[in-house]
Image 1: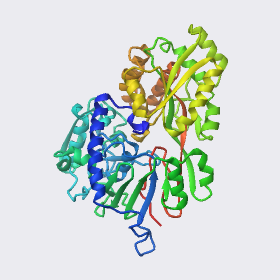
Image 2: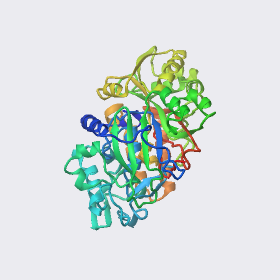
Image 3: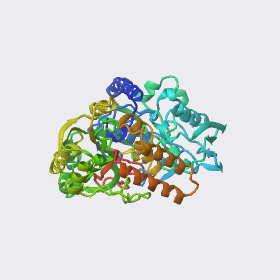
Image 4: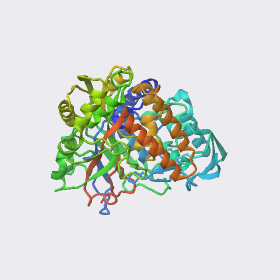
Length: 531
């Protein structure tokens, strides 16, 4: 599973996902056998001179099914942006919240009550109407602990959801939460009558109300979509069909782009960006997506924050960015990048300072620091691994590299069998406000189950401050408190970003009017035509 989404999953949830993947694989293999559009079978135009088929190259295979309540894979999550709607959705390129199935952003009735009205005439892909009961069901299944929904951690403030009438839904909150209108975007609305009888079948063959219908999928080959003609929302499909080629091999994606087999690819290898720019439009978009360094604070050596700080000061981050990422990243100066609307420059900024790293280790009473560094096998992460080792060696820190698939590395982490981990992560696909981004790594599962920080006074203060910020009535108050959290987690360095990377995308701008590269993993063809 791609780390940016899946790495925040509890064991019970992970086992549920694993079961779902098996069922999805069996079902989607059968669906694929039934046929579907292919690049050779479908015409390039509909006779009017305009193309009817979009083909794209995605970098990840299908690692999970499509049920939006539990999907953790980057590719199915991107697919779901086209298949499903929420009451509120995020603009895929700007991550700004906008009405989806709701006629407008949810209305605040009082401090703990909101209402939303559904778009008239909205239907699911089976032709049935989208009702308030479907909305209630979609939220209640997320909130049910037995369902182990990945989305539940983002809406802990919801107390009850009820249908006022067939088109109106009312939310009661446990406490005031100013970001409620945008946060409900994490919940996609699903048809109760289809999901409830057979959730596994739905996971394999999703039915939503979005502009594109799911046709078929094969785990390591392709996903096929077609336009939903009865869609009456603000972002109708502008192509008749889409085929997403699942190309985990970077060279295959580049070749597909150069040959014209696909009109867009994500995750362009950094070394190929310049070459591709000669025949295609390329752009590297700054993302929240980070490379983080996480220490096992249950290990007595890393219980001392000076040791953790030393690891950061010893890193030659600028060399890593210039050499391994060809300049496509920015060194972390806060928890979020400087381009983020909630950016706060941390009181502690880790510049390359070998002398300071050695001084901190000496103050901590550490003579020789040796440990095994776990890294995931994502291509660009493997590229930076030797540079990390080299940086630390210059400060007298000896790291033995252990590079393996994400699932294997996190299995060790979740068993407490690790010392230090370097890995990518990006929860901004779920939402881009600082509260959500901070809670992902600093509230609940990660600090309590992964890096052993839960007993520290600093963690208790982070929780209290985030909860206080969540209930702050004004934006200035929230930002001030988020700044305090940033300062604290930077100083503690139990888990902290090294850099925020840029995501290179390539596309044929003449063939895809309206296309925009994304600041998250995946591609979006909402409001995109095929010329």
